Image (cartoon, rainbow, N blue to C red; front, side, top):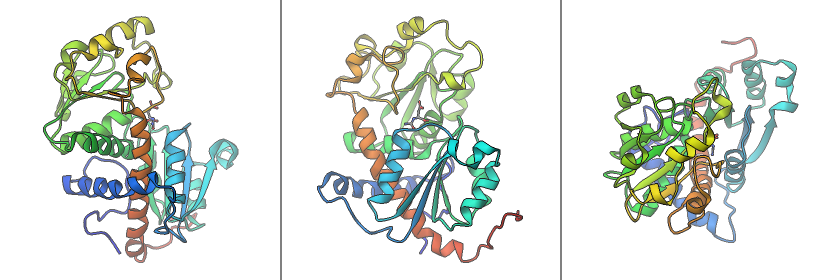
Length: 325
Ligand code: NCD
């Protein structure tokens, strides 16, 4: 039956979700943390359900944690290796989606290098679709796991000051976090060179800083981003050395933030580029490993919720065949 607190078939992004909907997802996820920490992690809330992970881009933590999240709830999981599938033979995204749809999965988790590709795919299938990251657009479960990490550590989201630093331009993590945090009443600052944090970002209800020491002043959370060189065409930074000098998080720059400020990074980290090992591995301040832990709990909540919502919505959906819309 559709959960009235989250009446959606898919999770394609954070943009458009309401504060109570975000709160509901975080509350459900919170309930899975202890289950993941216990010796017996198995439950059967998704028994009989099928989840397909369809990843057109590399991933370590996101794919693994979706897989664990589904298995810990008794679901069947298939991991589609795109390089070995028919996509490598030229099958289009839509053909792949329609083919997988014909096998009646309940949830498709999709990661794709093009912004908007996951939404396009969601329009062609009867199952629920979770966006595992589309280009530089959105990565909703990452923003949810970041929010859960912050909420558990600080007890709230509203009224906090969060700095998101680095390659905002290419980052779906930044975009989803900006939507989530501004929706929940958190103050967001973006810090980076103009080439990576365009002034137009201010339209998203955030403050923009090019000076890292100024931007970090009195922040409660320092969220670092990887330089996404694979999405860069052209020169965005003079050199890695220079970038680290101005925008790499080290002890000295961190001292501008609040004394109890937490350090976050979605991973994978480039040590010595955007973050110094000294602060990344300071487990008094760094919650990077906890973010990974929260990722499983968040994905358990999302998968179970969407699989549960499906019964109601799917009944009225015509089957979309290969020749269909
Ligand atoms: C991020 C991603 O793929 O968007 N990683 C992740 O999911 N943990 C960030 C990145 O690749 O830098």
